[in-house]
Length: 192
Ligand code: FES
Image 1 (cartoon, rainbow, N blue to C red):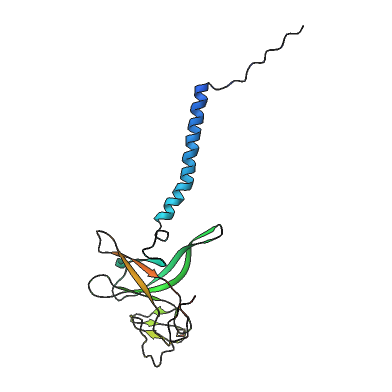
Image 2 (cartoon, protein in one colour; image 1 turned 90 degrees about the vertical axis):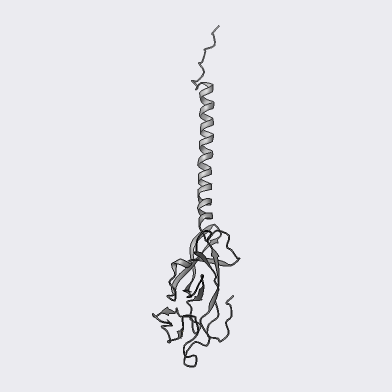
């Protein structure tokens, strides 16, 4: 009668070595997964556009100390938007003029760059705001120059500004309630 052939068991790692390997593998995988999920989350939260705004609807527009008194600065307003699964982190939603007022403390005015006449983009000409399309001119406080000859039937559209003090600093963050308005009418009316 034929004797059964003895098949040697496959070579294995020693039990303790295999466990150690599996433990390290699991820990390593967990660390990689945490980094994959955690790093973008931290970056997302650090970005001021994604931090909770001091008031709903307000968007960051820089710092007061970046402005020179009575010298308008054009600022691009961006936001993070989502379309189904796609994230657009730097969507440009509009442009504004910021004007720091003289005097004690921080005082900042904001205007949309859109001309209230027919919607061209208003420039700063050195002493005043000037619309290149039909010659609309505005003071640094947004009021029309020569209202009777001005093609615009209302002043520049001002925006609500909120200054958020930075602790231990005289600077402040500038937050803007960015809105768009209907053009070619004397009443300021939000575009919905
Ligand atoms: Fe600005 Fe006409 S669009 S003056």
